[in-house]
Amino acid sequence: MDDPQSFVELNTPGSKLILHKINNNIILESYFKDPSGNIRCESISFENTGERSNFAIMFDGQNKTNTIFAKDGNCIVTPFYNTDRQRLPYVDISNGYIKLTSFVLGKGTYLDVDIYSISQIVDRKLITAIGSNRMLPFGIDGPHFRNTTEQGIRYLNSKKNKGTIWFDIELLEQYSEEDREYLRSLVINESWDVGVHYSKELNSFPLEQAYKIMNEGYLYVYEIIGQKPTSWCSMRNRDNILHAHYAYENLGMLWRNGDSGIHTEKYIGSLEDNTWEWWETASLAGMVHPVFTHELDLDPAVKYSISRSKFRNWVNNYESNNMPIVSFHEYGQVSRNTYDASFENLQYTENSVLFDAHTNGGIAFVNVNVKAGRDTQVYDKTSGKFLDYDIEQDNSITFWVENNHSYII
Image (cartoon, rainbow, N blue to C red):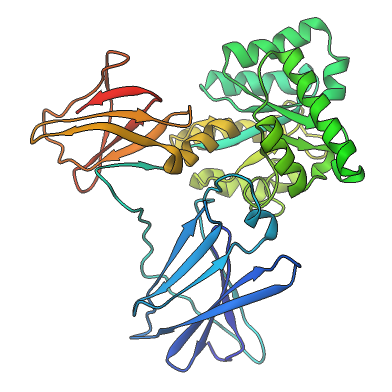
């Protein structure tokens, strides 16, 4: 760069980092908000050897911290940037991508950033649960009336995709019994997940009244649809971390919103014609970002919805990347199994590995650190089925496991 005031902002899951170049050193500042909302930071220096600076960032979704390590062993530990994300009442999950933005300031005319290596690792055991970057969490609010959503839902189902429906209480009250039966069928027969879309802005009410609204809405959706909701949101996404705590601790639901939900990127969490320019590129690249929308079938779409042709292109783009579109619940369960899953009754010999898998109830993606051979087989003893698996670069294998199932390799 040609002005020392210029800098690079590096956003990783939960973090806001600033990189400055000063002489032969890179100074990294990690920013975060304290409980009062004031912005603070910690800094660490990296030697800029041969124009390259090496460092590592460790995401901790249990303790809600990022740790930045320098090559010389020094490190700093800072909370996640946003206070809502710091206060989530459950294990947070990585967003799965990083973002670099260059700022040319002062009298500067350029700033060049060269990325020469990025790698991602996890502490390895013989059996390690890992997340999946091959699934896209999706859902719809309402749902709005069948003549605005049914074709899109049918198209998703035809591709073996599904999502979450955040049922709007006021809309549910207007549906005929035939329409309600159609929605129940999506949940029971097509594996769509159930959420609650509160028909009011929860931030507009005192907490006790908001909690009453949340209880009543949860019970109403459960009664009408017949399955317990797993996540929630409210009118115009006007809700906060206090509502999130109540919903999780009293109703067992996770917050759709916030920095670890659809607001990972501020204006991208809604799939609509106004965000299509971003989503077209992202879907072609197979990028993961939690997303919701409203109507699917009109062309052109109404405000806050996606046109029919664009929606089909979006679905096709993820299909071409071999990425299923899934519910928020399934995506979250798989991701949190990196923390929740455990493996017991391990028996390891030169020729076989036996173990029992215990998860949070959802499936888990596991890597087993064995050397796969030409005759390697993976057998689920509980279901009595041989399983497909992927062979990784180091000849280890990865495959999906289910809760309380026993496996032999």
